[in-house]
Image 1: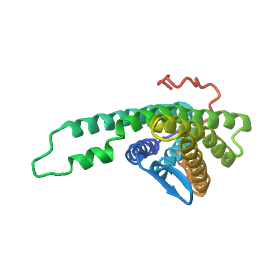
Image 2: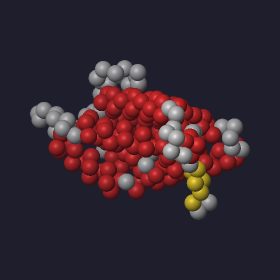
Image 3: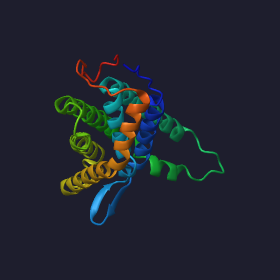
Image 4: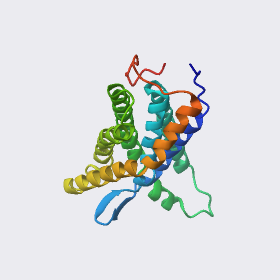
Length: 225
């Protein structure tokens, strides 16, 4: 049996965390394209699910769980950095303090909503993918990737929109945002299949690993593998 190498685990984890930070920055803008309303975070956030799928499928739920918590820590650092930067007095010749706070001012609430939604969605996505892998004995990868995203992104999007924009927009508008963002994220996952499927196959060969979570403790709060 080939010993797993895991040469690419750290770069994937780094890219995963980067997409989360970018999503926090973009989340405060609501856009409408073709009658579909959604947060601008949709531009990049679904990438975190692609990376999450890769982590779970290749390295297993336990490894993905540790990366999810690392991403959570990265978001906490970003929030603390923003709060500190916003509280520092601006230089006399720098007139952009108000613009800085206006653009990033939604960060604390959006970040809280995003982190709560992120934990629920990512762990559900990883759990569903790992469980389906066992049930299908590793077959039907494309179906498993999409199905886990439908569940994870559905929960993630609903929690985020309600926490971030509840009381700001009317209930009907919230529903439009949830449905629009959810459908776009699922479409994003489907569109990414021509990339994610070969990437997963390549990583399994390169890493010498194709993990099955037969004896895994799926407790999301357990950090040890």
